[in-house]
Image (cartoon, rainbow, N blue to C red; front, side, top):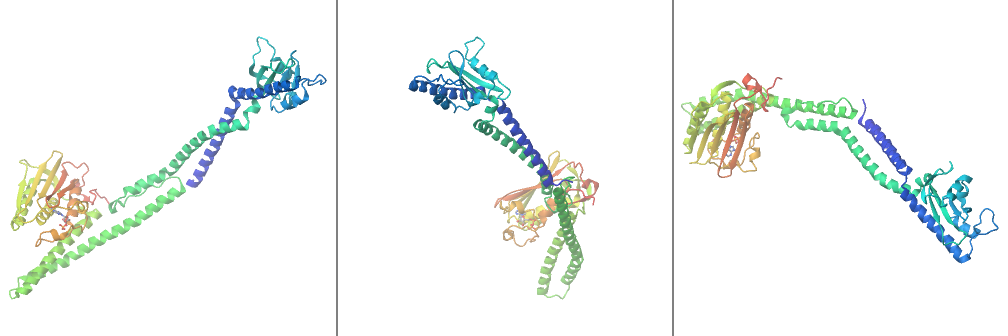
Length: 499
Ligand code: ADP
């Protein structure tokens, strides 16, 4: 199993060697055939210097050849000035004889120097500048044959040659090539590096996506896929999975504790309620005791409701809350709820309006859960609507979906509170609720949302502070893999649980 570190090192080394090879190859290719133009420029510059030297010497000395020298008829003082030319230079006299060879030209063999001198002959196939193959030591040269008129009758012209091979590695030209090639190679290396890093980090991005998909306590049963390669990645995935396992364990025990505690509290609460109710009917009880018992009973009822709600939510979290699904006409349930709303709204003089379609709206739902959903929304509507207000209930058949719309002209919900109202125990500004009503537990909407989602539906809310609130529950007519239709168990995420 290769570690990312080892893999990256290997790939990086390969990329580095590749870049270096590419750089070297590009440099060699570029320098192998330096532009003729580049060489001709050098030739022109050097020949200009030679012509100037010769003509100046001629002007000063009057004669620039020395007849007593066998090998170099050019005067030594003039010849020494021309030794500064770094490439082979041949100066030719009027009878096409060589009258001067500089140091690098004297290293040429006899035929090569004659070949260069011959370039000054006015023959039809001789051109004044071009490329020529000389002896094997110097190889190919770029030459310039230039007649010189300003240096007296003893000088016909000069031939200057630059070996192509030497020229290719001249530092200045090498640097120029490097400056062009290096940024290209650098760009390529950057691209390869970026790709390499992306490839090495891709599995980490995958793990991050998977962890990100685990958004809450309900998706803790998911596990990250352990990659097949990369020591570090395998360790990372295993560590994340172990952490998820521990988290799932703690969540499960927390849920179980809530469910168990709620369950255990139910019986004593029932005993308490029965006791208080019996005491209330005691014939000789003084009025103060009756009032105290009445208040106690109210508290017991509220506690029993909270315990009931907690148990429902804990079971939903565990995925053990069952839906007893059967076909039913939703109009009956809404009419029933409207009746309850009428009774609840009697005292605060709240008008309840109901709108039902004329034809049956039959849907496969858990009758008691939908009844609970409607009751939660209606009690809230009445509770948060001032005396004399309005509450409306509507059932709308939308074809593929059915909407239950519960509106009120009540106190409304502040925009900042809207995202939180479905959270457990969230209660916005309790002081604004109408006093005297059931105070509530802050669990009603959390349960309502669960019921809607367990049926494959959604719940939305629209509200304006001081103007009223509208809750819309949308239920699908067909739930393709609806767990409820199987009478199965439903978790808070509305998914069937088999575990
Ligand atoms: P509660 O038992 O406090 O009513 P819920 O979960 O049913 O708990 O509601 C949560 C909060 O949402 C309430 O405390 C209230 O602030 C707000 N709320 C719910 N329904 C309405 C409504 N019809 N009008 C105004 N506020 C509402």
